Length: 478
Ligand code: FCB
Image 1 (cartoon, protein in one colour):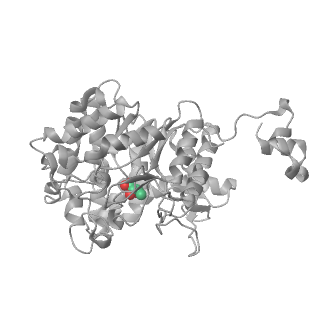
Image 2 (spheres, rainbow, N blue to C red):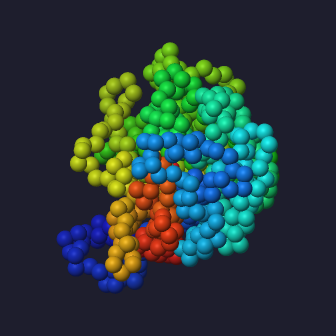
Image 3 (cartoon, helix red, strand yellow):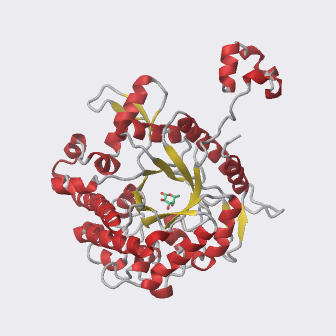
């Protein structure tokens, strides 16, 4: 029995402050509050361009992020990923840090231009060798690798030919995925196709804030969006063809986390409706094999051109779904054609060090729950969750990121709420292990639970490391 149920049934609310757990009769002892099912997969996540550095080593080709970060004015203080966390050379030490944390799993990404420097054509075996060495080291330390095949570092040679605006990029992506899966063989079982489709489509090709920095018109953007989801579907098929019976494939998607602003039956229903509509061009088409009528109507003449065969490919079945979740999008019921409306945040809405990172822990309850309800997804992972903080090294050498601990505690509490109700989330990957190259924010925004001095490459576990290590060790928040 949970303590609040005890208080309710015992009618002891008024006396609550005088009750301590030690005084509860033994017969009323409750299961550990905040615990997770045994085998829950605790992990953390990184991505190639954000941590590896070594951009000219072992035959790696150029990616759109090399080009973009070296273009003046695009990234905070002109920061580039040339060195980043130097993970390419320091991976053994970093894996030792993972082990000390008790991580069961590690999500990393493969840089496509390391494997195919020109995107297609001749592979570069030395590129894949790095990932083989790294994965062997993970396995030697009992850490299960989860491999993302695309975390935004498109080979520049493909961008020159139109990048994701060109349907051939979708085919090239599938070929690269098939080659990689075949050559990693039994080293990797769990794959993910592409990280956060919405982020790289909208930031890369609509606002131009990320590589390659384009601002396409709505028709071109919708067509590119279609080739991206097609690339995902073709990759799923290529991974299955190249892998073994054990190979599993999913996608880490940052579905817009429609969250009832107040938990009434009407708003909860509206949040489910909004989930489908707000994610129409990404998760919904993957799950349902069609674009919603409202999405196509909204675009009108700018709607993408597609075939029913392509829709089938796009909705190829997955073994699991990854959800990257940072912020809520509040929804309430409305008497309009859609049946819902989004609730805007006021200027005073609290956020973490990154202004976009508004705080709404209950989104980590509602997103997996609604995804499960709406599409009957049977296996999910939180493939990213975490936050930026203005971390500083204190005079005693420690980093007291109590705000990150607050954020994590509250989000993981809401995750536990869902899991305890039977929402099938099987693991959680904290973003991120290390402070790293935060895209257009350069090194200014720190997301790690391990502090990195980017001049000396010294690593210092933060207070949040201790928090996370404790959660993992107890498999519980309490
Ligand atoms: C996500 C990205 C990841 C990182 C975090 C903070 O959108 O997938 O690479 O930048 O945000």
